[in-house]
Amino acid sequence: MEVIPFAIIGSGPAGLCAAIAYGSGAVIFERNKQAGVKLLLSGSGQCNFSNALPKDLFLEKCGRAAKFLKPSLYNFDQNSMVSILLKAGCKLYSREDGKLFPASQRAVDVRNALLNTALRSGAIIRYKHRIDSIETYTDQFRIHSNQGDYIAQNVLLAGGGKSYPQTGSDGSLCRVAENLGLKVSPLKPSLTSIELRDKRICRTCAGISFTPHSIHISNHPGLSLDAGDILFTHKGLSGPGIINNSYLFEAGSKLRVCLVREAAKIVQESLTARPRMQLHNALCTLDIADELIKALLTEVNIDPAQRACELSRDCRKKLIDLLSNLEFEIYRVDSWDKAMATSGGVMLSELSSKTLESRAVPGLYCAGEMLDYDLPTGGFNIQVACSTGYIAGQSAKKKTSTNLKPHR
Ligand SMILES: Cc1cc2nc3c(=O)[nH]c(=O)nc-3n(C[C@H](O)[C@H](O)[C@H](O)COP(=O)(O)OP(=O)(O)OC[C@H]3O[C@@H](n4cnc5c(N)ncnc54)[C@H](O)[C@@H]3O)c2cc1C
Image 1: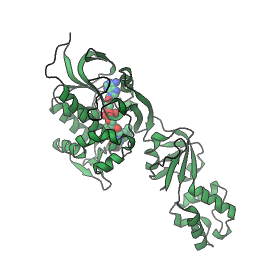
Image 2: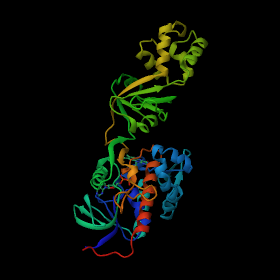
Image 3: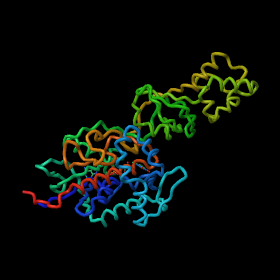
């Protein structure tokens, strides 16, 4: 049986960039009949493939995984990615907020650019090959697929996470990694919205967003979350302040939002400055949508139409408490078919950050979303998948012996 020098499982951005780095001798196994199906859906089909933030700020967005991801990002950064896409004829544009997109706003152009570059570099791709298990076999790997077995000298697992399982990324390669002896932390939907237990406020405020001063979650006390904008939906909450923190949320946990810093002082000033106005109008300096102010007041049985000067001491205290500490109980975090990413996966401590090779199983590499990192929206996920895939491909290339022995 012929020995494959470098078998790559998965043709998402991580697998394709690994193939680009490795070149001839790389064989990609993909269960679908086309490459990068999730990439095609990304950015609502427009593919926000990276972010132009300077590398130190980019790494800040990587949170606890920053130290591990640093060698990958410094080895293959946004410029490396841009250069591959431009060489393949995919023109680009950078938005004011740093997000990078193909100029055509078509994800398929990014997918085709990566795929064609990988094929031109000498890699080959075998579609409709679902990998069910992998065994170590002396110093090689036996790969069991629905189309038969293969022997490989090195293997990269790049099967993505578990979100949008209809794209082919269903978490199955995390099980394969676990069976090979790698530690895998539990998989959980992330980059997603939440449903609230009490939906009353959603009925009146769906579509309204606000900018919180700070956000906390009861199951991680003491942790101050990224305070991005929050949007009311018909069933719960969404927006960057929810989506980017969702990997920390659990059903039953309580979200505490401070809407206004120094609420006591600001409420006092607003009411004193406009004593004859209706209460909700007097609070206009709070920079919170009128419908939301009315809904919040109604929530604590305060009439929004009463005059500001008529507000009793008790009601003023209730209002200040509400603005300082608005609490929502999470009924559930949206499921796999709505989540844009997966939290959990192959634990970073299992791999060398410089090569992405397993510490325990030489020749086994893991890259992309199946690793245990949590990144916000904004192009970080695709860039990190590409950077980790690329360094894994490059490391495997350095390691591959030029003298392939036939398998006995
Ligand atoms: C709706 C949506 C929008 C998104 N938008 C953005 C965005 O704009 N910007 C951004 O940065 N990120 C975005 N993401 C996240 C981003 O797409 C992923 O993080 C990225 O694709 C991960 O790349 P990957 O190569 O690790 O895995 P994937 O892209 O998931 O690729 C894994 C591949 O492995 C294959 N595979 C899995 N298991 C097997 C198996 N057992 N055998 C054979 N093949 C297998 C799958 O079929 C798949 O093709 C979005 C995600 C979703 C769901």
